Image 1 (tube, helix red, strand yellow):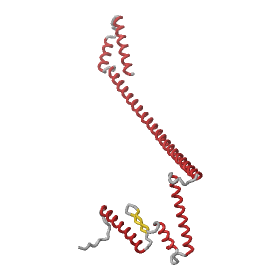
Image 2: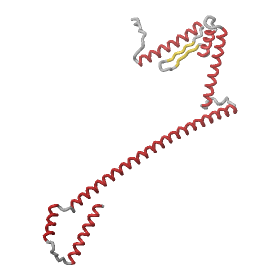
Image 3: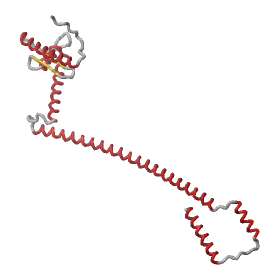
Image 4: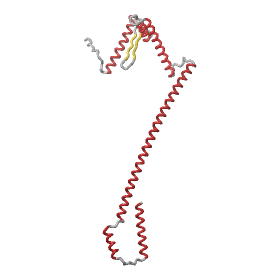
Length: 241
């Protein structure tokens, strides 16, 4: 049985897609190698997976060498770009490439890598750069901490003001409740020592009936009545307070 026709569309199954990618990538790398050996051709192959993983093959020294040769051929074509502009662009590419490599090398030095080939002067320069970066980082950290402390202090002051307001409100409510309780007490005391109108009239009638009559009251009884009256007055005053 012959192989069925493969439909060229995206494989939805993730596992099958990864397996197919690995097989076809290896086959493509193998074909590139065979082409370079059998035909004495300069081949450069670059493959990026869906996850960004790089796979490359170069029959020459490296892929960048072949790419540089490609760009030289590309920009040296009289059909696309004039010769003067091609040379200018080529010089710009070389300058940018050198700058990129220098920046990469400086970054590795700052990370403490590849320091063996550096001189004392270069090491001192790197040390100064690190000290300056560390100082700036500390200043920024201090600034952020101060701003955070100021924010917390402001929030603390706002909470103190709110706390005072709530405390004043509670004290006002407590005083109001206390005043209301004293008012009820005074009303009860007034009711206790207020005579009923009928009783008052009866007492007035008795007083008018016995007008001119002087009742003899012993001194001992008078003193007892005064003591009782004075004790009742003290109780009333204590209840009011």
